[in-house]
Amino acid sequence: MQWSDFDAGEYYKINYVSVLPEDAQIIQCASKFLIEACGPPSALKRAVDVGAGTNLYPSLLMIPWAERIVLTEYASDNIDWLRKNVATAPGGWPWRPFWEVVADLPCYRAVGDPRRRLADAHEVRMQSIFDLPERTWDLGSMFFVADGMTTDEAEFELAVRKFLAALLPGSPFLMAFMEGSRGYVVRGKRFPSVKITPRSLDALLANLPVTGTSVLRTDNSVRALRSGYDAMLLVTGFVAIELG
Image 1 (tube, rainbow, N blue to C red):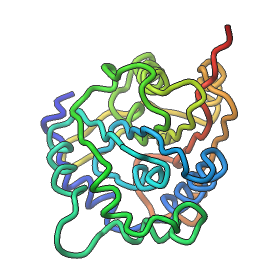
Image 2 (cartoon, rainbow, N blue to C red):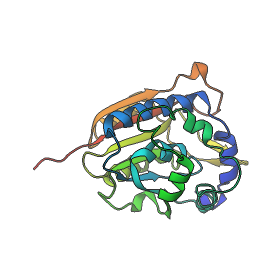
Image 3 (spheres, rainbow, N blue to C red):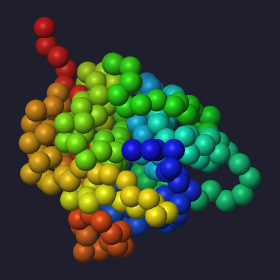
Image 4 (tube, rainbow, N blue to C red):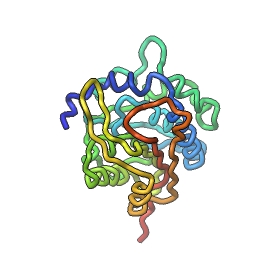
């Protein structure tokens, strides 16, 4: 796959110009998990959003607990987009509606200026998921990455394992996938995807070094239509603590 052909601006326009109902469901579920898993943000964590792309809401979900947050990316156009759009700039903030979903929740309401907080705390890093350093971060997210870069199930599983291996034992994590994806098109170019089902995801989780996992399947009866898949699947949990 030639990721140099990926049009980040077009992908953003397709997916994140507004808060679609399924995104709101994911944000609500993920924020509840993080509030319970992380507690009051007294000891700030080192966080990572793997394959951030043009989606800033995973980083915003983690920002109350993040002293520093690394946004990794592989596609050059996504790198350029992040460098132009994460840092504070004049004008309106298009991610305000996403933040408003959590703004009144515990931990989140203590963040006075989420835009400035993310601008000050973030680092954009060009890095393949397969080259992530092991046992580096205390908190992590990976949204629509492992399943949206290949049709090979073994490569997909390896990418998930590499993400989890980059987190310290006991770390909370968020992972999101597209159920039943048949690939996706950005400005006339088709990009690959692994076809995931709730059953196949459960089987994968049973063989991963994770604990306390929960899976949310978005309710498609209330969502605005995005073609090419059946639902979104959000996995929350903790990296297993090794014994011995």
